[in-house]
Image 1 (cartoon, rainbow, N blue to C red):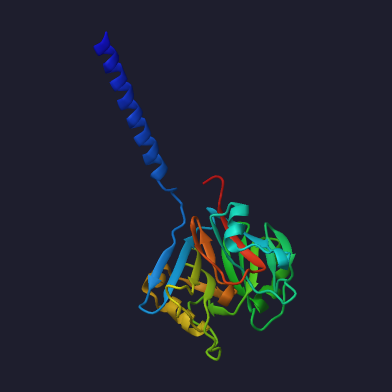
Image 2 (cartoon, one colour):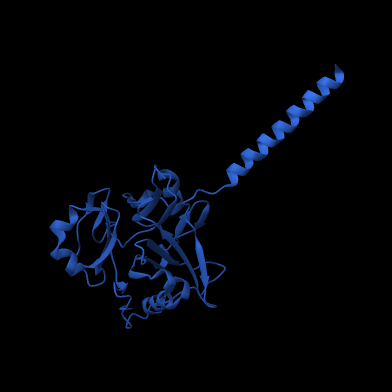
Length: 263
């Protein structure tokens, strides 16, 4: 009888161990569509980029409406349970957005005429990303806004739909950079040039930034086009899953990206 009991206890122990190993293995399996943070280094500058399928992920705008109580990127990520958060577009000294913002088909701020903010990046209700110049957008504004789920006005446009660099060579200011673009398969590409203690010279002009995107072989393979500059400099920051590349200055509006519930 004692040997039988020992045998049964041993069997229970083995089965329990196998069950726990199985559970741990399942925990370690990443989601099929999990976002990937890619790092590129050309010897001098470090680029971060993320490829996002708009059919699988939902884009929204979140706003810090109170200048004195604004949340940083990491805090916004936790509040909205997002997979990815990054700085959005420009804002005024009065802490108001400068340019069109649409989130969940709701107009948050109207179109703004500006030489700098010469483009509108948007996603249609059918999950198709597009970038139009301010002039082209305003010509079709009434028709377009009925079919837009997400939009952010920013600028300047760095690379057009024909994959041509059109950044202004006269802008010689070097800074950290944030950009959003589209690849040949209509995925959305987030590109970050983030200054940190590990690379304190990670600064580029808009033209240098554009050429780095254009000439990088990995990004070339993606067929990236329609790239527009978002708010950069001290505003540049990103949080993805448990990784956080902090901004220096908390911003007014932020882009949150969250996996669709059905994925």
